[in-house]
Each structure stands twice: as C-alpha cells, then as structure tokens.
Image: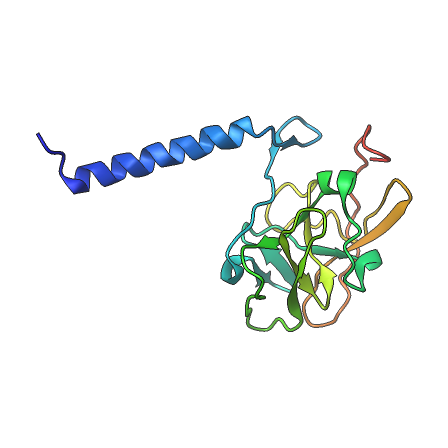
Length: 178
C-alpha cells in the first residue's frame, strides 16, 4: 500500500527536525553561569542576519549585537577563549545584507575558521553569552581580557548616537577573568 505524499511529507519533516535536535544536543554546546544552555552561534542567510530594534542592531533571534573598540580596523582579535563569551554574527554568503536604515554593513572572513562574519563600519559583530534574551544589553560598555588581549564592547547603536551605559553583568568565575 502506497503512502500518500501529503501524509509522508509531515512525517519526513518531523523526523528531520528530531534528527537536528539530537545532533544539536550531541554537539556539546555551551552553558551559562546557571547551567542553562546558551544558544551557539550559527550561520544565517544574509537577509535575516540582523535587523533594527529601536536604536540597536539585533541578530535574527532579537539578541543585541556588539562590536569591540579593539577590532575597529576590521582585524578579528576575538578568538580562542574569547569565543566562549562573544559569538560572531556569521552569514552564509560573502555579501552583506541590505537592512533599511543601516549603512556600513559589510562582511569579513574569519582567519580562524573561514566563516563570513558580519561587520558594521568594518568592526566585526558579535552577540554576548550573558545576554539572557532579546533586548538585553548586558555587554554594552563591558570590558574583559583574554590572555594579553583587552576588549571594550559596545552595543551597535544606529544613528551615530552612543548608547547609554547600562549596568554591566557580573563576572563569571573561572573563565580568564570572568
């Protein structure tokens, strides 16, 4: 007996989704300070990589996007342990998305893994591990050190106005100064 295509397709999609969930759980992932899983960065299509929420640039999940002063020339310096807290905003292609009202978006190729990372005015963009959800900006004006590299991070504000300084997130113990 043949299974009609309309019955087979939902089952196939459900099985594919379950397989992706199992694969994601097996990848190790990273965990926040309370032991809760933290979303790992993934490459997204350029058109959906970032958008504007009020005055701030956010990723496809609504999480605030940041840049560091130390990467203002476009040279990626956040590598190794830094990537445990700052997740690159990556896109699948090498063409910057066209986001209305946002000038200066570009793409750089990361030397450490070859991924295409979105930039704003040549500064590589990241999300922050300690932001718990959409709209959080705990990484704004945050400073940290990884080895001999010192970073000062800022929420990517649109319109050239500096963002007001929110309260900085508390340090996480055991991670090179966190």
